[in-house]
Image (cartoon, rainbow, N blue to C red; front, top):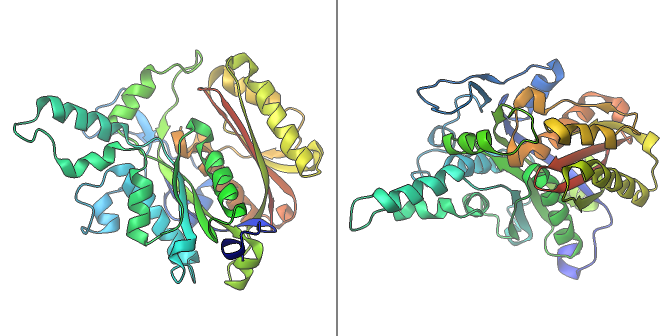
Length: 364
C-alpha cells in the first residue's frame, strides 16, 4: 500500500464528496438545486447583516451549535463550523474503514480563514477591558489553519493536516496538494476541498476590492470536500469510484489582460498530459469571474465545445470555496447524466490576484 511502501498510487480517484451550500446541507439539496437552475441568492436581513450588499447566498439557517452541538463549539467561528460540519457529513457517508487507520487519513482544506474573527480580535485588543482585553479562547480563530485543525481534531483525522489559500483557485490547489501527498506515500486517503464564510467584514472588504472595473457580485458561502485515494483502496473499502483525477495545471499572471493566455496554457498542458484533445472535453465548470477576468476566461475556453455549467451565478461569489462548488457541480451532473461516464470534464479558475488553474477529471 502507498502509505506503507512509499509506492505511488496507480490511479487517484474521488470516492466521496459532501457539500454545505446556499441550497442547504448535503449533496441532495445541492444537486437538486443545480438541476433546476434555481438561484439561491436572496435578500439580506439588514438588521442581522449590516453590510453594503442587499443580497447574498447564505447556508439556510446555519448555526454552528445547532448543527454541531454545544460541545467544543463555544468559541468556534462560522467558517470553522461550516468546514467541520462538511467533513462530518463526508465521513458519515463514505468513511467506512477510515477510522481504523486515522494516522493515514488527513485533511487538505483550502480557506482564507475568517476575516471577521481576525478583525474582531484586533478590535477587542484595542478596546477590551483590562487586564485581559481579549478572550484567549478566540485567538485560534485568527489563524488561517484553524478550520483545518479543528475539523481534524473533531473527527479524529491524524494524517497530514494542511491549509491552502489561493483565492478562487483554492480548491484546485488543495486537490493538487493532496494528490502530491498521496503520491509521496504520506497517507492512504485525504479529504480535500475548501470552505468560505459570509461575514460582515468580508462583505465590507469585498465591496471595496478591485473587481477589474466590474460591479461586485453578491457573495456566497459554504464548503465542499472530496475524498481522494487510490482506486484500489477505494474498491477494497467498498467505496464508489466517482471520478478519476487526470491532473491539474497552474500558472501565474501579473497583468489581468494576460489571464486568458495563462489559463489557455493550463488547459492545453493538462489535456496534453492526459493524451486528450480539446474536442474530448464534454463538460466544463468555469469560474466565471466578473469583468475583464470573465472575458479572459471565456476567450481561453473558446476552443472547447463542451457544455458549460453555471455555478457562481446561482450561489454567489463563494470566495475560497468557488472552485469547490464547481467541482461538486461536475460530480452532481455526472451522477445525474450517464452520458458523462468515461468522458472528460474540466474545472477552471481565475483569481484576481494572479492565479490560473485547470483540473481534468473522468467521471466513472
